[in-house]
Length: 260
Image (tube, rainbow, N blue to C red; front, side):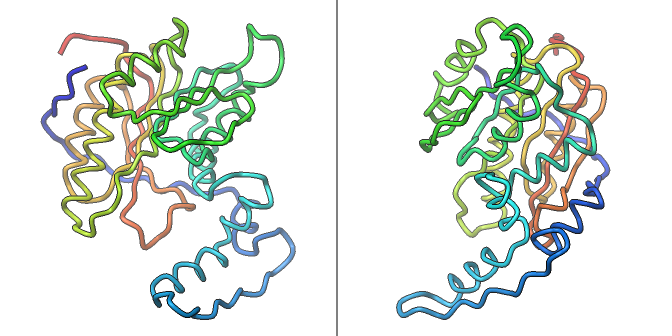
């Protein structure tokens, strides 16, 4: 599978607005109840930065909601908000989740595509892949493998069993180096590889969503997306922390495989 880069163009941003119920719940952790902030003592041997991170996690309304709703990660709400805004997932859809661990996006996809409900002919199909091992998820076929391995795309295609995908989604991110430009280029490389795979397996009308970081070169990715999809945009869900440079690129209405 070739993984070449294409020229660039610009695209406007788009902020996902959560529903009123979601916003209220996110502010309180549970609708109608205000929760007191959890204090964290600086334990012996723990750095201040680690203590501050732990405090943020314990008091993060999305982390609290994830626990209450049986979701594996707060990231699940990023996909939920994007789906609520753009109506991406429908019952019966075939969905591929790249970089799925710990499984929050796959859980949302399985619930909304109804991959565990109804007759087999009308059930959705969710396939997840990650280099990290994941606990089983009802309605999700999990492949324990690095998506960037040469054999990974073929393994995913085998799991599709001849079906074209309705959605290819990627929340992949490389381990942070602390160097902004390097981290940006690494995550863009993952998104470009995900896009090339999506172009191979999506059905006409399908969609693609991938995590990127702000930094300029994501516009090259958007330019490539515009060749294959009718609509492309930047999205920053409310569940994505405001102080994070994280963004998502979203492409809808796949045109079908076309020669470059």
